[in-house]
Image (tube, rainbow, N blue to C red; front, side):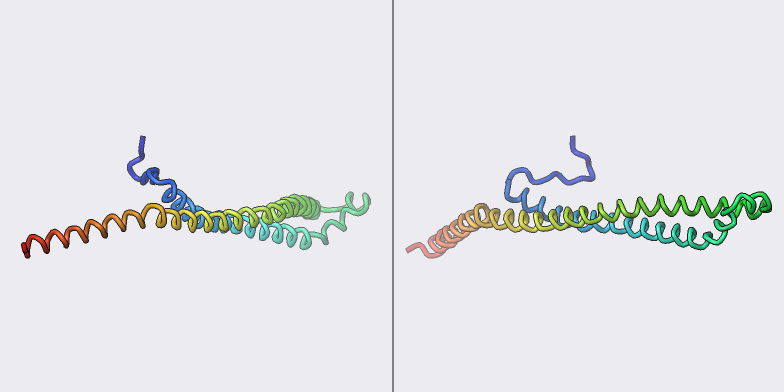
Length: 160
């Protein structure tokens, strides 16, 4: 069952199929890399923001240093200390996520470059084979038919 909006792949010729597959790989590999790069940078910004929030609220964690201070704190100061602690936890969690994504980003780079090189190779191989093994013989047949037609036409116009 073919979807009406999607073209059917060229399956009548392996070389043409390989060439078009290579072109698709050459297009999709950078798109995949770019989409992951955007997500990676977004995670990096989130980690930096969490770190900034944790550093900005560091002053209030000093208030919790002693039990004596904790007993005399106002409700507002307690909320600030809680906010400081939650900011630290968010920074640690986001930082760990960022480090994991940074490691995975190196893998994505290798995958994207590999698929790009493979796409270029398959495109070159497919178009080269298609031209040499399919198109050139068809061109020779067409040239022979054209020569035969010209010869036949000259015989009809000039019957000697």
